Image (cartoon, rainbow, N blue to C red; front, side, top):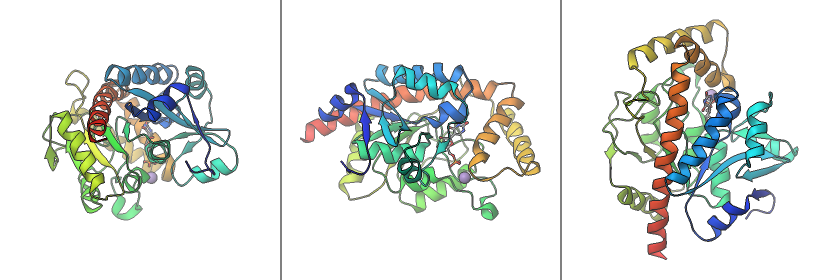
Length: 310
Ligand code: PSU
Ligand code: MN
């Protein structure tokens, strides 16, 4: 462990990591910035339960008192869910918040940093950040993608957020040598929708084979992660035409209001939720939960192959 960075584990997670039992890391920014109270707290609990149902131990990550918390207690989650003003902490913000002894909610990117430091090789969330629409001029590419090239953590998700340019997001992952494996679909999913219209480079439905693929990527010396997608369940998915119309309107509003930088993702997600009468927020919660269960199963499969190799 790096002595400069305090890691505060819950007892359960410390033991699980120590014994090589499967753990799935989870982000906290979706609690503070993605969903509204009290749905955020309820969803965070359901996500943890779903990881357990999949056969793994959940570890929701945050920063508090200048330490990385590897596993939030029920009270921690309730506090983060209810208190306004807890900052979004992405990879570039992490050293500042740690140095100041501060706190914050971790994005996918900073949660991957924490997961690797904590010895947790699997992470799950609903939708990755990615290349924003119009990034050709704004250069807005989520740190989630860059961090994926640097942290040895497999990420189970329902693709990337639909507000993004998913074709460019896939191009980026290809350029950066990040394997993308679709589980249960041919196409790269679009978070609320089962297809982005972009075909995934690989489809593997056998979870043990996915576990072997992840192990081989790292055995080959790659310093980064693997993206494993799972589509939203049919009953949770949003009609792509409805979602697209809401996204177009949200993008126009963001431009009119001059929103950019680290506030853009949250702004767009909320604008789309409003335009769909909360339909996309509902889908977001359902997808977080179903993805977490798949993540739990995949991490368990990976732990079995790791035990076999010992
Ligand atoms: N807003 C949401 N849901 C989210 C996020 C923001 O409604 O899930 C998050 C995730 O934490 C993701 C981050 O890692 O946004 C990406 O932000 P950016 O595009 O600024 O890199
Ligand atoms: Mn950005």
